[in-house]
Length: 252
Image (cartoon, rainbow, N blue to C red):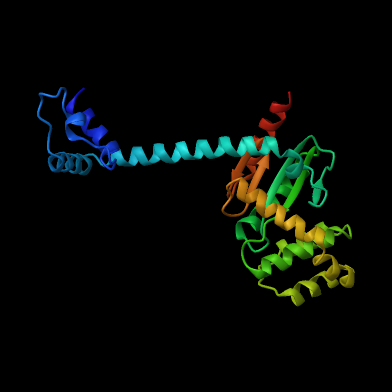
């Protein structure tokens, strides 16, 4: 074992309670080991001279974490397909009988979600076999929660898309009165809407979405599931189209 290799091994084991310099740096029991302080100085100087070693190591570790997270998410999606893709409380638009489903976790106050919404609209205008499932994930404060409840309640009046589009079109910090006035201007039954906003079904849908997001490892919005793949964060139309192609390929 070369001395440099033994130094690299030191970096891995130095924090271990079982660290023994002679075992790490000596070829044999008779070979003197470098003192720990000397090794630390060598490692320090080497990293200063070659910072790309740390950069490459961090990139590699980040990629491994991403790969592991993707594997865990894929397994979770496979085991929970019914809740993710076919929850009757989750609003759906596009072709409800489409052969590819895109699930979006979103928050009405999220600027990246508002940027993604027209991409989804364009996608279904160009591909008549796509089904969109909307998962409310109100994580940006009380106004987000009110908007999510209102949209889910509107779905019970078959007016989800009308209110959804209006909420997506505005940059708002509306309180409940403001959102109710908006809904009223769009022709929704406000008495029924207010009752449905507080219903057990709406409570359960939001709680279930939050649980799904947690189990998928999501820490923000938007996030998309296409087929068996999870895509967290903002995206573009080309990426969504590519994921749709991959999902159809999986079906064959």
